[in-house]
Amino acid sequence: MATTTARESALSRDQLLKLYRDMLTQRAVDTRGFQLNRQGKIGIAMGSEGHEAVQAGTGLAFERGKDLLYPYYRNTGIILACGFSLADLFRSQLARAKDTTGGRSIINHVTAKSLGIASISSIIAAQCTHAVGAAWALKRSGATDRVVFCQFGEGATSQGEWHEAINFAAVHALPVVFLCENNQWAISTHVSKQMRVPTVATRAAGYGIRGVSADGFDPIAVYTAVRDARAHAAAGNGPVLVESMCYRFLSHTTDDDDRTYRTRDEVSEQRPNDPVPKFEAYLRERNVLTDDEIAALKREITDLVNRTTDEIEAEPYPEPHTLYGNTYAGPDDPWLDSTR
Ligand SMILES: Cc1ncc(C[n+]2csc(CCOP(=O)(O)OP(=O)(O)O)c2C)c(N)n1
Image (cartoon, rainbow, N blue to C red; front, side, top):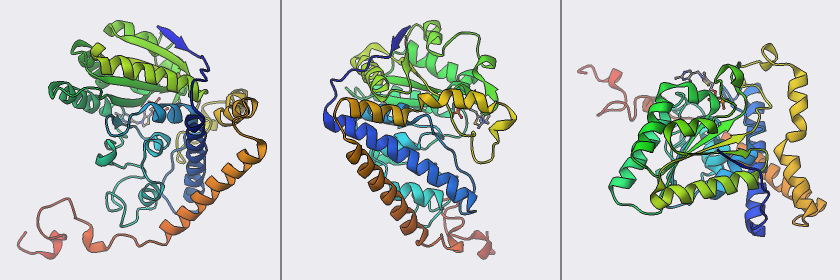
C-alpha cells in the first residue's frame, strides 16, 4: 500500500484556481443546503464540510467527455467539479419543475448523461456494482483511455456488494478507480467498529490490486493519487483503490444529531485540518493569490450561490398532473382514466 501526501506543485495556476473555486463552491452550496432545510424549504440536506479537498481533487482528475462517474449522496462537490450546473443542483434541492427528474427525486440525486454522471446512490454500495458493470462495458467495447470513477464512504466497504464489485473488477482487470472518502464515521458507527485493518487501502491486497491512501485534506495530494490511479486503470492494468483520509465536520445529515455519538472535543481537534483555510494558506504562501483576491473570490462565489438560490426559488413547482409522469406509459394521471 502506498501513501500519498506529497504537495506536488506541477499544477498550473488555472488548475490550482479550479481546485480552490470548486472547494469554495462546495462549501457554499452545503452551507446553503443546511440553511434552506432550517428555513423549512427543503426536506433534508447532506453536508460535506471536510470533504472539499477530496472532491475538488477527484474532480480535477476526472477527464470530461471520456470518464464516467458513479457518485454517492455526499458528492455534490464532485458533480459540480465535473461540470454539473449549480442551477440544476438547486432545482433538485428545491424540487422545481425544471429539475432533471421533474422535481421527483430526493435532493441532489441527479443524473447527467451528457457529462458521464450516473444517478447518485443513497443505497450504500449499490453504485459499486453499477460502476463495475459500466467498466466492463467499456472494456468489452474496446474503449481506450476511458475510466469509471466509483465513489463511496468507508462504511460502504462493509457491504457485500462492495466486495463483489471490487473482486469482479480485479479479476477482469476493469478500468475502474474505487474512491473511498474515509471521514471516520458512518452515521454513528466509528471506523474502528467497521474494520480491523488500519486503512481501507490495505484491503486492496486481498483482491490483488493496488491500494493507495492519500491525505484527504490536501487537494493536490488527492489529485495526484487519483490522476495516477486513473492512468494505471486506463493503461489496462486493472482497478486501483484510492482512499482519501478526511473528516465529516457536520452531522451526517440535517436529520442527525452527532452530539449523541461523538464529543465536541473530537470535532474541535480536527478543525485545524479544515481543508479550505489550509489550501488558502498554501495559495497565499506560493503567491498564487493575495488576501484581496481570496476575499474577492469568496464574495463572487457567495453572490453566485445567493443569486442562483433566488432564481431557482422563483421557478414553479411541478404541476400536480405530472405526478405519474415517467412512471406509467400513457396518460400522466392514471387515476383520471377509469379504464385503467
Ligand atoms: C444498503 C444500505 N444500508 C444502510 C443504509 C443507511 N445508511 C445511510 S448512510 C449510512 C452510512 C454510510 O457511511 P459511509 O459509507 O462511511 O459514508 P458517509 O455517510 O460517512 O459519507 C447508512 C448506514 C443505506 N442507505 N443503505
